[in-house]
Image 1: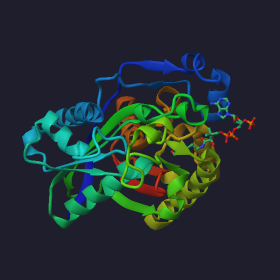
Image 2: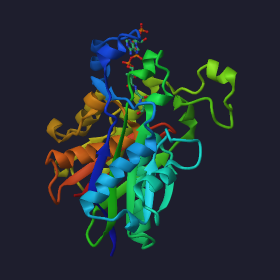
Image 3: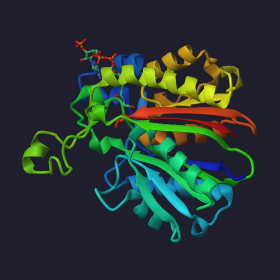
Amino acid sequence: MTFSRIVSTGMAFPRRVVTNHELAQTVDTSDEWIFTRTGIHERRVAGPDETTSDLAAEAGLMALKRAGMDPMDLEVLLVATITGDLPFPATACLTQTKMGAKRAVAFDISAACSGYIYGLSVADAYIRSGMYKNVLVIGSEILTKFLDWNDRGSCVLFGDGAGATLVTASETPGLKYVEIGSDGDFAELIYIPGGGSRVPTTHETVDAGLQYARLDGKEVYKLAVRYAQELTERALEKTGLTVNDIDLLVPHQANQRITDAVQERLGIAKEKVVTNIEYYGNTSGATIPVCLHEAVEQGRLKPGDKILLVAFGAGFTWGAAVLEW
Ligand code: UT7
């Protein structure tokens, strides 16, 4: 039997750090408000010439290098992003060229903060079906170029970055369980109203700021806590694991208070929960692969460890996965 397994990780961030104090100089906010309400202290912000595919290629090449794989041997390159370089073609194609992964099939996955878990499920299906033997799943975002820097309700929450994982065929799991889902009834809880076929870009739409992300933070907050609890409980039930069997919980980093609520409701020890929102804010599709990379770097993972991933985001989309490291 063939299973899929993550064999290496990578990450990339813009160099520029923007602290809450810096934001408070231009928006009516404070370090105290942002930190107590979200857990964020600072975020990375891309420069004018930095693109989502630049970060994706850097993180992707790091993951391939760590696995000792030549980019020319890569079969599938997936980029989970909602902040692509261009409306089309896919950011994955632009990333492919930058990586020199000439033989890979490359396409994007648009599932916002759940995008990486969606990508993992595609990789798993390809690998288990025998269609492909290796898939690079990257989450990469430059959200800061899609934010209204005068809207304190959204601009303080997000940051830029990329994470990558190489998933390959294996005789032992690997990925033990994955669930993904969507509900378009909630599409306008987090969205960008302009710039698409519904409201094409004009001078008027730009003046009205329709190119920027809008969110109903309170509603998302409530849904996120509810979904994360249901998803994690179902993942344990379906895999026959108990919360004590889980060595690491990697939740999407939207708000430290959401993470704390999920941790408490699940009854998992705080030390087993990965959090990095303090340094990066919410990096949407990049968050979970970055957390995995940092957990590897910090020596928090050893072979056989059970990892539970959970995410939710614009769409509304959600996903959960259980991995054996
Ligand atoms: O991954 C999916 C995307 N992520 C999300 O959608 C985020 C999910 N939601 C959240 O994390 C939280 O709902 C927020 C952090 C967005 C907001 O936290 P909250 O505790 O729900 O605050 P609130 O929206 O109820 O706002 C409380 C007050 C309001 O003032 P009034 O009406 O009480 O006078 C806001 O105007 O805080 C005000 N406020 C701010 N004050 C200072 C909102 N944003 C800010 C700010 N600085 N940045």
